[in-house]
Image (tube, rainbow, N blue to C red; front, side, top):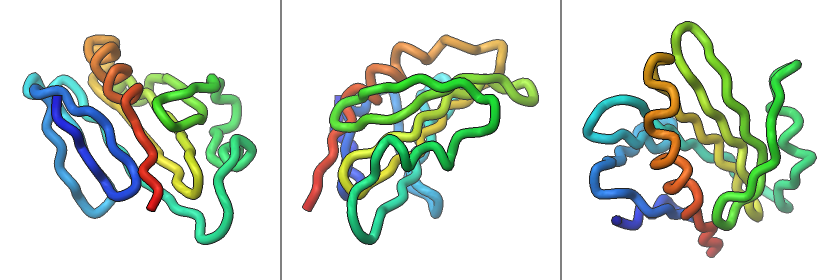
Length: 128
């Protein structure tokens, strides 16, 4: 495993997964090309994020669960849309909010779940 550091946060990246930075954040994929994990961030200019702040991102009628992943707390949901299986997380620690999405073809649903869950469990907040 390698450490992926992205400013104020990090996670452990298995050797078969690669990460690239683009304009919107970080895109992580495995060699199989089954799915893609995307992470973007939002920072508060003053104060810290709280669980209540996440409500503004909730889709009407979309169920979601409370989660704790590494140094982050937040909400998670899973759904299908246009033939894709999608998992989303809104995670906060201090002044940092991470929006994490994993998507794959619906027929591949669940194949990378364990690897994605393991990676996200290693998330660490690295405040300055």
